[in-house]
Image (cartoon, rainbow, N blue to C red; front, side, top):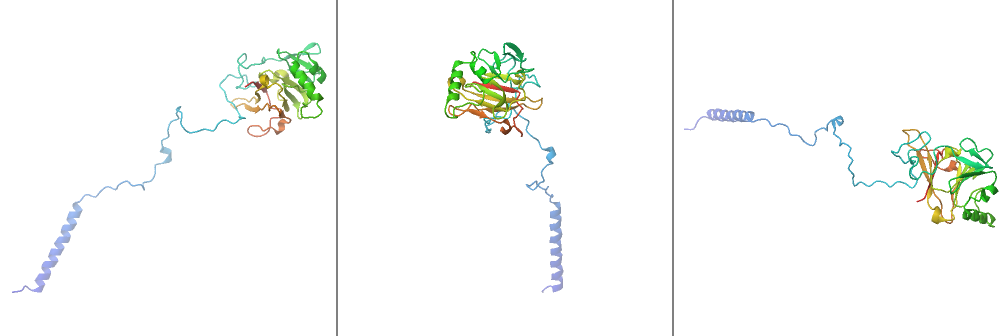
Length: 280
């Protein structure tokens, strides 16, 4: 005998309700997993980032080579600022060519202190024995018996040459660095040939250099170059610049320091404290 449809519907409904209730209980008993960290996690506060401590170890990262004309040459050597750059050697050390005090020169049979006054002299020459002679005229300077004969003869031959190719600026001498107080190789002139650092204050020429000329005859003895230094007050580094000696066919010619670029801007006119001759 078949059961009534109403009874069958009630049984089916009860069974479905039991399954739904049981499923809810089973899922409620399962633990809820913790959220996992993913790549979408926000970065830490930059203020809390850790940085490597500086190290003295060398790396393989290439660095630029220094330029031929460095803007500054820092040094740990002691300095006599404000008169002297730290890059200069200590007095009495290697490369030192002149004393820290004033230069006493021979002029017209008497001694004069160049740091105080040149009196009537228009030019002065540092001679191979270390003495300094000063003169009134170009003829006196070239005729000085203490001047190396080879330099004197080469200068006279250049002056007598028909063209201007070999002719030197006024009062300059072969194998001597000629330092002029004015542009275009004019004004007072200092002539240097011996290597070493020249403290221009001792010669009465500090911050008065405006042009330079150098023509080499004997490259065997007079190779190398020169360096000018503007001594700065600590902690500012001294300013330096290399001056080329030129070549056999071309002079080292700097006719106007106003056209000579200065590190950081400006020019070198009337800024030189030290002049260094370097025999490479």
